[in-house]
Amino acid sequence: MITPRDEYFHERSDDPHWNESGWFSFMVPERRLSGMVYCYHRPILGYSTGGFAAWDPSGDRHDYDQIGRMTGRLSVDGETIDVDGWSMRDHSLGSRKIAKDQRGRFVWAIASEDDAFFVWASAAQPVETDPVTGVPERVVAGWHLRDGVVAAIVGGESFVYERRPDGAPLADRLRATDELGRELVAEGRATNMLTWPNYPTVYAWFAHFEWEFDGRRASGEEQEWLPINQRRRFVRRLRASGP
Image (cartoon, rainbow, N blue to C red):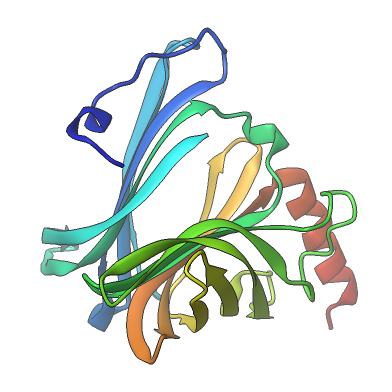
């Protein structure tokens, strides 16, 4: 259960990898525009960092994720764009050893305040043998909100069946089951893409996705990341097999 106290900094350990971070998203679906504010703090190492990003097709642990609505205005090149849409935010804390992360994805969509989902999928194979393409990822965590009733997701898989030439995810099929026995079947397609090396050892893509799930159409995101060394090997393989 999230409480008001969770909005403040938490007591930390002496682990040098201790991290506390916050992420806030927004979108303007009709413009195929996505954005976020992201910050993270490493108190033992003595630094804090963060920033803002917005993108559209013209450019290229303790943890909780919570839906809401983001409103405001975004000014780009002299144009003011109104923001008023569904949003997801994240708050993470604890030891975060980024260099040990496997390839994975955050996948989410919001159709209404009563219908939404969030899924964390992770590669089933070790980094050394993970082919990236042609294999599904196992769902390791998440939640499913249907008709106002939320339940934890207990299993499933996510499969990116279409990618750009550089490997960025373009289309995903998701099938999962929650602890109430309800099945979540979702299919989504990217409408924009941000390429973001957000940590020195991690390469990531953030994309606005249009989803269909539980008989509803919804906006959301797909965030995929992989270790930078795996990314290098993957790109070399793509180039070697390309025209």
